[in-house]
Structures are given as structure tokens and as C-alpha cells.
Length: 277
Image 1 (tube, one colour):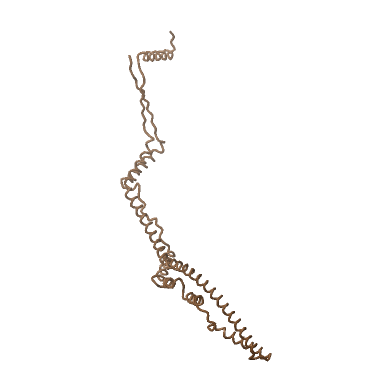
Image 2: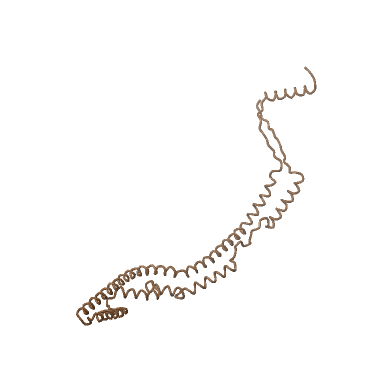
């Protein structure tokens, strides 16, 4: 008494009548392009921006400047001389020699070129004073002369010692400055090489960008066949929303339901015929 029945429904989706020729034309053109290998074309145009003429001129000048100051030439030769001299150029070295001589020398009053002039003036003053008092050549005259010359010598020694102390401090500071000059000269001596490295880095950057662009073009060219297939399938899928869609549903069936169904059908027919029982 049991059984089953199938219920089938069919739906059809058609494109707008005026657009159907466009779809047919578009798919036909896409298929033709695909067969010719032109549906997707790789971009083989270079996208690398070359150096401007002004940039190239600047790079050339930097290269020339760097090369003229390397290998003992120009700046590198002068800086190497400073390094070889302990951190001083020629003028500084001359001044340093004078400071060193004062800082390490011994006191000799007669080596002071200005002392003799002061000595002569002092002696003349004492002599004139003694003569004016009528005591020239006396013990008083001699005592005053000795005292004045002693004071003069003492002042001269004090001045010398002050200069020596100052020179020793200057010599110490010069040693410190020389160490700093050595480091500065060494760093500055590298500038021409760094300039060349900077110019070289610019060329390396251009070469790297050129290689990357060539890789992009190669990849696009190699992937062109697959890209053409994918694009053709994408065009074809655009028509997938149109066509016929059929759905079948399985429904329950038995004797009781069939009788009931037949009765409902008969009643419907009787009612539509207008008869009465």
C-alpha cells in the first residue's frame, strides 16, 4: 500500500532579449582572442625610471672629486700627513714645537731678548739717580744697583715660570687635541671613498630596479597562457546565471493518501460541475 511520487519543477532564466546578442558577441570575441593568445597580454613595457641628465652629471662630478682626493692625492694626502704628524698640520706643528720648547726648557735670563734692554734701562736709571745725589760709585750706589738687579731677575724668573706653566698646560691640551685630530682626520679621509660608494649605490639601485622589472615581465609572459584560460572561464561564467534549472522533490505516497487525494479530486470536479448529492 506504500509508494512514492516525484514532484519536478523547472525554472528558466533568460537574459534580457536586447542583451542576448551582446552576450553572444562578447563570448565569441573572447573565444577568438583566446585562440589567438591575446585575451590577456603581458605588460612588457619597462617601468624603471632612468637617471635624469642632471643626476648623471652630478654623479660624474662626485666621482671625479672623490678620485682626485684618494690614494694620497689632494685631501687624502694632507690628512695622511696630519695623521703621520700625530694629528697636526704644519702650522700647528710649528706652534707646538715652540710650546714644547718653553714647557721643557731651562731658565736662562740671558736668553730673553727683552731682558738686556730692561737691564740697561735699570742700570742707567740707578746710575743717574746715584750721580744726581753725588753718590755715584759709593756703597749705597752699589747696594741700590744690586737690589734693583735682584728684583729684576726675580721678576724675570717669575714671568718665565708663569710662561712655562702655561706652556706645559698648552702642551697637555695639544696632546689631547692631537688625539681628536687623528680621529677626525681618519674619518674625513674616508669621505672620498664614501662618496664613490654612494654613487655606486645609486647605480646598484637602478640595476636592481631593472632586474625586478625584467622579472615582472618574464613572470607575466610565462603566466600569460594560464591567465588567458582563467579569463576565458571568467567570461564563460558570466553566462552561468542564465539557462534552465530543474528541481525534483521526492514526496510520500500510500493507499490512504491516494484515496484522499482521489476524493479531493472528485469533490473538486463535482463542485465545478454544479451537481448536488
